[in-house]
Length: 197
Image (cartoon, rainbow, N blue to C red):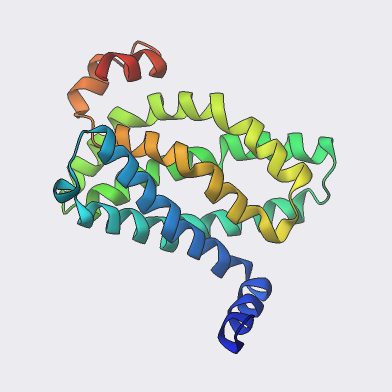
């Protein structure tokens, strides 16, 4: 039987979709970091919990609000859930929000790791293009589903669920040496992924 507290929580999350998105990102992004660290063959005691905390902070306080703002603006500019509106929003997202979010990820996460400004810029420079190529191969289909079939109030949580695996990839790329990425930048990102496993 639901308690008064759970009813209040449900009401708040129903009325404020941004908070629902922030809550989901605060769970899924640290989880992705844990999954990525597991693939690095870390034992339970070897997990970098501060790294997970940085992912949770970044996901909930940066990704969720910026994504919510982008989705709100996109819905105002191209209202509706039609295929045509979905295609337009997907194309616009691929050339506006996606590059911004990928650059922001590498830059802000580097600063959260206490790296100097020039190193954060160098990381964006080395890792943006391979990440963007992979993103263009993955996200347009998810964006179409989101824009055409998911109610507007659930779009940020839907993307956060879909981003669980994507964030594992981002975490993997984030912790690759820049030199490896630069050396492999002429290859496609799938080849880079295989070469470093």
